Image (tube, rainbow, N blue to C red; front, side, top):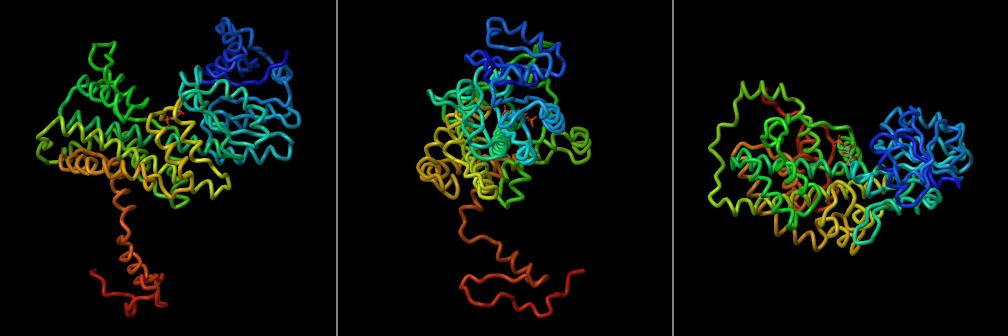
Length: 478
Ligand code: 6PG
């Protein structure tokens, strides 16, 4: 009996995905560059062996799969994917489907999709979220490619995806790069969620001087409320964990330097390319970059010292912690609103028709940003799929009005206390700018016209587009 699907790359993610596929009753052929790993994987597969066809050569591997052959490539993103595709291509036939399941840049995905077109092969760019556990037991899967290629893999992918109250967290989101674009924005939002949690943690640790166990209890409590989500849950668990060496809280032993592999940065670059503000995500990416400058930060602290401010002024600790919870919710709304706005713009830019309610739906379970909150977003976008911004849907407008006061108090308190809250402040700045019908760019337009005769539009619509600036040179201060 031929395999329903193939998979190349038996690293942790690939192995787990393959086991998940086999466990759900799908026969799968597997191949790895180093054949020893294939044998090892097969031996470890236990009772799932019956559904696994381990292959030592690429010829055997391809022959083992039922045409048109869907082949998942789960290897390090970037050049290795191109190399693997080039090795595989000569062995494939008309309509076979190469599926890149890594965290690819969607621009690479578009290029690969186009490059395969003439050969008669097709390409799927597939975003897979949920880490190692997700891959093994149910990830959230974002698919981009032709509809025909999606139809070929729909059954298998649906069988392995996470489920939210019985609804599978997998969907075809559009042609070529749509799946990887949506995965990228998922990660951008993930960066913002993580950074905002880290900022709140900083207020609790450095402002309220709470220890890891006390902070863990706060997050655990929030996880039972409106912030209920995977990231809040694991934050509480992380804060509870003891260091195997020495027994102190492990978080206190971890170096404060964050890594990043690119998806956050790409989200921001693409947002900027399209002129869509994604300030909370930008702040989160920049915060990781600042975190990486550990040596410079330590040197700067020696030169500048910490801000010369009085300790955090908090009279009612319980009320302040409630404010922190609401502030985090408000800021989270800002980050998601921005992420969805970036996707809406990309959908127009790249001609994808990205289905916003479906994206929110398939993020409710399986992925890293999974939460209760995404069910509320699903409802809001289902009611109004083409709304300009999440924050003007009735439900989210009400939530913003209810929680933005807390965000304002928390950001002010943190700023006065000398604690950095760039992502929380970015979300607040976004609300305050976005909701203000009359902004201040009239001054910018006047300046542009003054020094460069760039022209401006008038609020009365009059047909006069330049100001009375004389020569336009000014006298200058220097
Ligand atoms: C997921 C994660 C996963 C991973 C990324 C982000 O959705 O399962 O986003 O893809 O954590 O690699 O990694 P960085 O934080 O290293 O950029």
